Structure formats: C-alpha cells, structure tokens
Length: 373
Image (cartoon, rainbow, N blue to C red; front, side, top):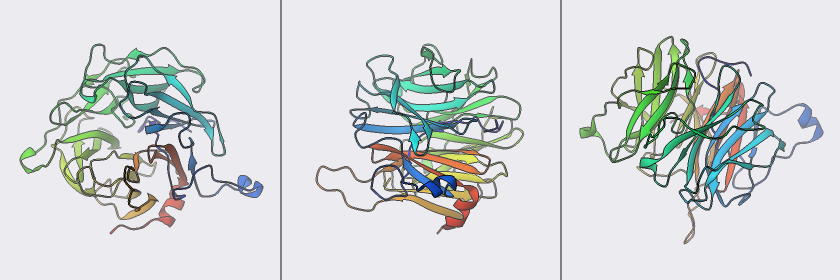
C-alpha cells in the first residue's frame, strides 16, 4: 500500500459479519482463490479463542498486502486480565492471535494501529482500571509487526487519555499528526491531539464547544478525522444525543467549530471513517438513534460531497433476534475502516466473541449499496 499523507494507515480492528451468525472462515475453491471475490468476509478469531471476550479492534494493511489487526481481550471488558492481542496474515491464511502487550494487571483498552512515514508500525492503547483515569501507552515494530518494542507512556503522568482514543490518527498535508481524543470524567468531552514531530510529543487542543442546553446525555467522544483540502480538517463524533456530531477546522486542527448535529443516527456507539483517494467518504456506524441503543445492525454509508449527505448505504451485519434470559443482545460494533486505493477494509466486534472483517472494492460497495432511507 502506498503511503497516503491524508491518512496514517491504521484503525481499530473490529471484524465483520455479512455471513449471518455462523462462524469460521469463508471457504473458497481453487478457482475462487485465483479470482478473489469483490467482497470477502470472515473472522480473525474463533468463539472463545484464545479468550472469552474481545472488543475494539484496529486494522492496518502493509505494502506487501498483509493485514494486521489488534483488539483487547480477556474475561470481560474492564477486568484486570484484559490485554492487547494481534493477528497478521491474509484472508484464508491468518496467523494465530497472540497477546502482544500486557504491562500490568489492569485492564487494557482500545488499541489503535498506525503507520509512520518512516515505516514504523505504532500501536497505541489505553491502560487503567477505569476509563476516566486510563493512560495512553504505545509499542513500535520495525519489522512489519513480527517483533515489538517495550511499552512506553505516550504523555508521562497523564490520566484520562491522550493521543488516539479509538480511531486512527491522520497525517495532514503539512505533515502534522492529528489524533481524535476524548475524556470521559463527568461530562464527555472531545478534542484533537496534535504532534508536529512524528508522534514524539503531543499538544491537546481545547475541548470542543457543545450546546449542552439542547443536548441529551453526557456528551461526545471518539472522533474520526479526515482532511478535505490543505488545512481543512473535519471530525465526526459518537454522541449520547441520538445522532453523529461533526466539527470542522480551517487551520489544520488547531481550532474547531462548535460541534453540531448531523442527520446520521448514532446509538452512543463507536464509528469510524476513511476518505478514499477520489474524496469519497466511507463511514461505518450503527444505524439507531436511542442512547445506548441497538448495535445489532452495522452499516457502511457513502458520501460524495465531503459528508454533507450520505445517499448510499450497505448493511454488512444484522441480527434482530431477541436474546433469551441472561443472554446479551446481538452486537456488531466498534468498526474500524481503512483503504488502499479503492480497496476498503472494515473490522468490527462480533457479539463480543469474535473479531470479523469485511474487505471489498469501492465499486463492489457502490453496486451492493442501496439508497439510504
């Protein structure tokens, strides 16, 4: 994959489920292997292997075509045994998922893969017993993810989280790195974290302005970013107010407009976005409007006008079955999305038991998409 300055090729992995609630890899004949389908789906993990629960994936594609995915996993989100796991390979030829970072007996959270211009792979992640006071740590690889450095704290002494909180940072046309960040102590607040020295040091912008008099719930978090033209940067945000929110910057992310409501639904669940080389935006999201609402449907939406409208949509995972007593309702959530040319890779959490993927071309996505209602 050629390095694209408008995005640092990394993203939280999450898995994908066009294949209903069944498990396992998509089977391919020899002829199909020689002529890969326009859309491929499958799982990186099996149910309960190697840990009972997985969530919050991130994904990166290397220039040799291999894909690296990472997520956190353990007994349950937030338990002290949770660590960061990673897998590498290609559809039909994935390696075994391995725990690659566990710095102490506190929960690990929200890995984010990134590729620096000098070829290093960076894996950011959070550590802490509680989200409001977690710390951001990172490890690096100089050999395509085969070995990793010792973990270091991103901003020494920080509590509350710096750098990318869920989604991939981007590299602007002027070389700045920008990460979408947020803080969840009391009111939920979002901001941008900026590095001008290739990720060595970071400076946080002020929190985004939000009209809380006309807003329900705690706030906005987990920005996903893109640059539409030199210095013009935009973010979409998860919210507790039933819709995705947006903010815009005219000065390379140093200052931001007030966050404002879009017409795209959000049930207080993670989202992610990638901007294709022709400017098309691909957004992964859960199409529900209730706070802490349904994550049982996951869709990709397309915008051809810099996010003003989203006329096309493809549902890639859906299960409307009602859970039995003591069962968790179906969940396809926390998507991550990246691209290599017109090839799009999406990952997401599958019922907290597996990490799934959806891989397809822009043409295949458009052909399969329907008009969004």
